[in-house]
Image (cartoon, rainbow, N blue to C red; front, side):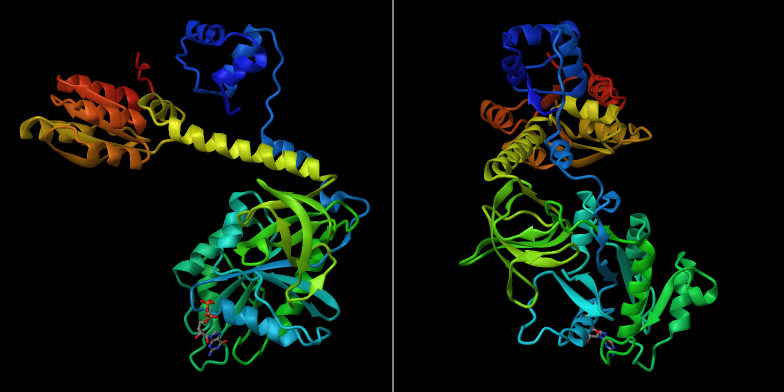
Length: 479
Ligand code: GDP
């Protein structure tokens, strides 16, 4: 996928006109810069008798992943990775700080805690890693990218405040993730704390406390006094035990980025949590479109370390650019290999961008509607007189079908202007309609440059017909 007609022609070593003609004969109007979809590629490869393997760089990238870490016979126990979520002000930050402060002195003499986006503490000789990035952005980011590093979700609810809108959001997120949930009933030091009330509210939303016959542990804590922190950590370890989390420390490293930035003096840095293998200084790594060689690893105590074991975390120095949070970092056999993957990924992302910006014509929107990918069609409407403006507006508002609604984002009497074009260009899935008005040359030129289709009409029902056709995903291509 993501190959343009001309690139396909080059690959096949056939003249581009052949490709375009075959497509045309099959009723597909395409020009040299259009992207071919999987269907078209299939048809073309049949037509030209070639075998085409479609490689999504993402798949190819995943392909190098070893077998699932926990099915690896050499996998051994690894610490759990925890995400804390909850309503604002219910004490996520305080709890993360309290856990850290309570545990950090043990065995970490001399170090000064650093906020790097994740940290590891020890409880009863076992490690637990917490993701410590603001909000649950990292969690959502990673889930969107299919990077799932959280093993257990902790939902914090202030015992004096109860379930709030964001609590409901995180309950939903946590449930969707399928991860075990532990509830931390925070602010238990407060006189107004009412844990039973909170339990009732949580139970109403499907989070039933164990002591009420449910399956979710509710641990009373106070981030302020430190009460209950040990309980919470012990609960985490018990839950983790059941999960039998494993990784192979001898495999090639695979890690997830939880935070990243450009640092003065250090260049691009990324805090990673290792999912499998061991990340070492000197490793050749690729991380999305970034690559490099690990120059330094700095742990959450600000100390330089030589390697990072599974479920542990460190700031990685040595990438050539800043990777986004949620990206996967992988060790490669050589610098060459790492660079190749990074370049492929870059090309892939560039194509995605390009295809986004070139695919905004009415035909594409029609296709998206047909595929059910487009839920609302925006319209900018200009007419010659008030009467027709009102008539078209009211007809358009009746013209919604079940899946797609029409949203007139701007309308008015008068010629089509440059600002109309700008508005359409800056709005996704937006069409520019003119009734008895036409764009001037300079407006046309701008529209062309911005990839904006202007449709003009002088008969109302034709305008309505076109939009109806679009809504049913059947509009014929423009010639
Ligand atoms: P976040 O927005 O969820 O990260 O919440 P914070 O950790 O910033 O806490 C919000 C406020 O609640 C701060 O003023 C904290 O000092 C206070 N707070 C957090 N935990 C406790 C607690 O256990 N007891 C009391 N009394 N206050 C707390």
